Length: 274
Image (cartoon, rainbow, N blue to C red):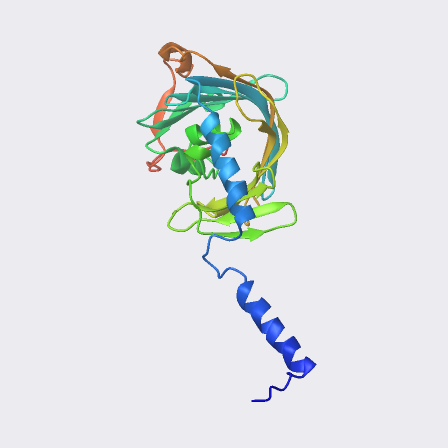
């Protein structure tokens, strides 16, 4: 039987069809390319090396803006990674502004200007009622500032999307976290999620820190669609090889201070906005 060669145009069509079949892009929800998997694997491996010390101590400054309000404070943030954690806020000239504390039972905030100790069972809800809509607990903030993302971010992702600077990984089934963006070396660049409102944290100015196995960001920028902006600049960060004594993490509350629950607004003056 005589065979007739296929016209060149048909051969081109067949070749294109075979290429499209063999190189189809991953569907939404798939794990993505092998490079995306490798970058995330490098991130997970680095987190495994970042063995936590019992405690931490860091200091720096924060700039906060929300609506027409804005300001700048200095902070000292220290405590035990397990609990408790304490955050002291001071004015740029060194005056005491507020002292925050979190343990396994409650969140508390002493405001010297009001001589009042505020208490609430949860940090995120309590801080929000004081005008600080934080998506994290103090302990979670300590983990992020220390580069310990493994405490919040799952070991597996649902889908990945390549960006100009790395990969954006999306999570499913997590009520708070939406995505994590890593550069091509596996370093965190952005973290997004949902709290009081959707939020986004950018990480920048990575540097080595004493006692930390991986470089950590010295600048963190939290933003929300509602106009909240919180910029943390970390000037010093150290791991502590022994836990803080309990007395070092107690708030400096004088006997004259009024104790007020943040879930009780009846018959009291308006809550301060930190």
